[in-house]
Image 1 (spheres, rainbow, N blue to C red):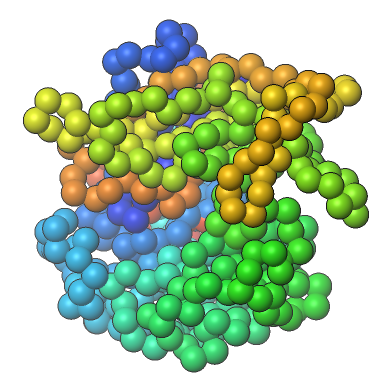
Image 2 (cartoon, one colour; image 1 turned 45 degrees about the horizontal axis):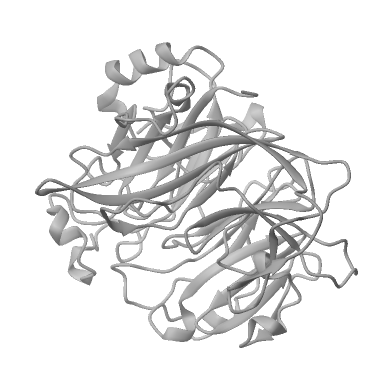
Length: 424
């Protein structure tokens, strides 16, 4: 594998750390499942509920979220009552703080999160965070417990090379009324294509151009959005880093690759099934979450999917994991492939061959023992390659478990000679 390391998987309450090296030499599929290296409940350890995570270089950041009252049972925490918020913390229970973990050294490893001296201009629930051309864009996301008016600014940006603070950006039209709870204000998905952010809020589509610094309303139909279907907000595909026109995506229980047509071509994308990597045939599944694709290197990719299965009289949560390598074939065309329609169905195509060579590297699953009541829906996932052996990391996790804190989606916020942390 190009980079041996771990997956960092975040839900609303927990951070799951998975050692991919454990899957390398297993039979396919791996039985029995492995245990994750660590499942950390960051809410129980005093960090905000539904904080958003961001990995840049070797720093893991946690942004915003909702501060809940200490001592709540998990059953109570999973109810959306506003009484669960700690009104004495932040803005009516919302956090604008950023926490950071340095993953470059064995001293801190993944068990240490410090409060960063930089904070957002306004608190944000479940913020959406994207890095575009070196700048960090942060947009307020859906709330869970919080039902009051939205703190402003709802949208801001940080430029590590120029600023020592966030800068306010135009309020999105779907947040014009500063309301979290109206159907037209609820974000259902987003995507980034080039220098444009696309958002689906309610039943409408919007775009933000970072060049023009302007929001545009695109319409109610996906057909009005100037994107191929698999780039639409909410489809959650991931480009293979080595190629600008190959996307790995997951929909309707199927993992597949998409070869996008050249800009201005007007043709339909080509589809190649990746059944050799992942095929969902579990008969005892009680619940299946959305699949997530993570880039691990220039050609290496990873697919993750959470599930709940019936095991005897118990319900067992688990995460399916598969890693694979893709190489574009010289004369790419697709046989036994399909071209998608806007309704999500597919049509058979009669082309001459696949456009990718696919090698499955490992397959298996990790059992989430003693997970609790939270449904393990994945909010974000990252691959991190350790500088030192993972056995050292494993030792440090056991040694410093009491220091563990939350992780975030944020880049190196200040120049190296200007980084200061407040110790948690």
